[in-house]
Length: 399
Image: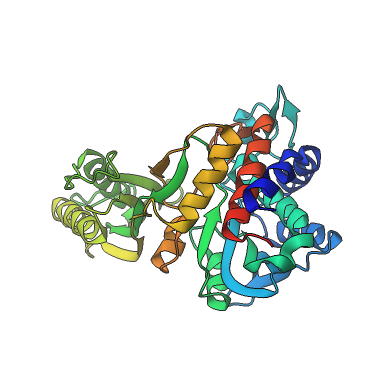
């Protein structure tokens, strides 16, 4: 029986109820990046995989802390390794009182499943775990292998689970990341340049009679204004028509009421395109920092404490992984699904920087990602399950 003929009836039965149940269990485990411990959500995933005879492995970072869960299905015949990836950690909740439903309630109302991480991306974890269970009985007939990777250190920006995976599996042929949204198959994303700037002033008593003292908080406010009003002038990039973007994302400094702050930290995130890269961002940030320091003299010049960058990327439409997922999405949605790029950088950039083709989005219909009342349309679960099942059978056909 051909792959195409075989995959259609297999995809017709979607265990939606079980997927929702497992997603609800995961949503009820707080896993806010940098706030909650990783172990509870990783253990919940590992326990589910073990209960379904899928032999999970815990991946650890360089400090031996658990950062991801991995399950693998291997065929008896040699062939390429592909990976389905979804994050198990989430963005922070923010102001709980602004949520319509408690962010860890995982309630379903009007066909929408609510909760922090519901769409990004605990539903993808649940879908991919169920796909692993479904595929396990036929996996030995694969000409190759399939990994299921669930990183719980993604929203920090460290991607430690992915990095640990790539250390043990550097030759993975392609990755499909289960981010939400189905307006297209996402085949590229802007990169980022992130920098933390320490703004210095004079640390003195707020009641001092001296004049000419630089208040680091006021100096930081000027720096933020300069960033907010600067113009990014990139060369046009036809694949990223929305261009680059600079955002101040955090400000910290000062304490109490009786001290003029002597320092203040400002975090800046610049989203990159292929024609406005890290060198452009670094030059822009450095110039604005110098201008601010000149306008507000202080005992020490402003300093860049840390910086991190990763480039933008865009896969070819002819990429094997792109063609497979577009075919699966097209079958599941009964229409042509275009290849598109997205504004946020993500796990796809990490894989791409390692030379691995990675789609970075086809998933459930959603609202409120990283905001209030994050939720997903439960009806859209079926097409996601079918799309990835079809894609896997295209990439790793069974005899």
